[in-house]
Length: 265
Image (cartoon, rainbow, N blue to C red):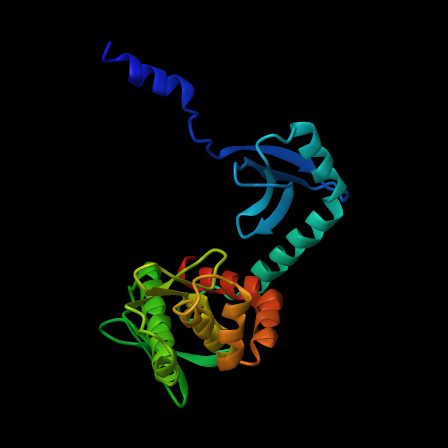
């Protein structure tokens, strides 16, 4: 009899629904055939089509039929083709790191001249004349990319170190730590333990946009949401936040793609 309550509980308790993924092929108006990831998401409330660096994705609520999803996809083929073309143009435009040949690197909304030097070990540094990459003749591309990532992280931490002191007096506490990550969609996040994470691609953006993201995340120390009260805190500290948000809508994908091309290959 002792097993009965447990058995009954398993029978009447619904298992949590999980994401269900598959893919389908779609032919665009211009004849291109693309793969679309189809995802059933228990949190979804409506059909949604999106495009990012991983490709096209169709999200369906659990109760939506595949027929309705296919119809929605075909109705938005023109939009999908436009978004895919934008991503392809960004990929073509980004400069890969070519040892000995790359002549400039993106940094803080512009490009900085790059000079290659021979040395006993890999070292990337910047001075008034630009960025200098010292490397042994047999240095691997992977080692160079790791060094470039470390260089960008150091530059980003220097920026945060300049801006942060001005904002700390109006906060209940300082962030516990700062992590710089390569993020697929977000630009920053604040964990419950007050650890701050920022997208490394921010160091490629114009400085005012980078500073806005920092302020945005710091304001979550005051309001852990995106309520009107939160945006009032942002407005008080960074009145030009709307312009910077528009900048990311226009340039964000290119910045993220550029960073991936340089440090991930």
